[in-house]
Image (cartoon, rainbow, N blue to C red):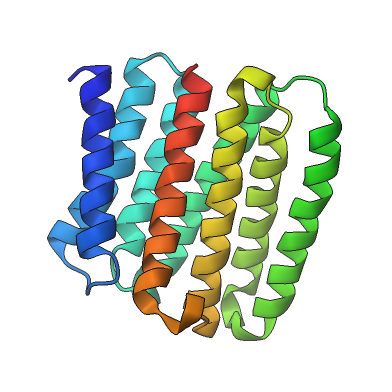
Length: 210
């Protein structure tokens, strides 16, 4: 499949999942479509010589998607582990591609850390035995986002994508652990989580392949 075909396949799967399947009970079609959206980006990164790091990070996130498409009470720890690994690979990739820290990085990075700490404080009493895993995950995503802020100017879409990814995770974690939903709407929350997440992955892919 061509580069354009893979972009279209990823976008189509993302649209079908977000508009028709997000928020529905677990099923095989739901899992396949969700995994295929990010999986197509991983194939694209591999074929377009984006480096093994980008393809590996996207593949790990696709595995995380497959786990989270199932029952969260059963598969959440496995999904967290896959995304944790994906964030660490992203962080290493961004660090390798970094440039000098500019004013934007010095301004936004502390805000990212403060936002992560505030979210952890809000979730802490509801995390139970997952506290160590969630703390490790928070550290990994902060490393990933702050690393993206050091990318050269041409790769700015990747930094925007990383911030969108983190925002999606924040909304999802508040829903999973506290039942907090945007405007009290399960559908709006599911749409926000998915489209911020997939949009973030697409922007990271586009930025790193430029």
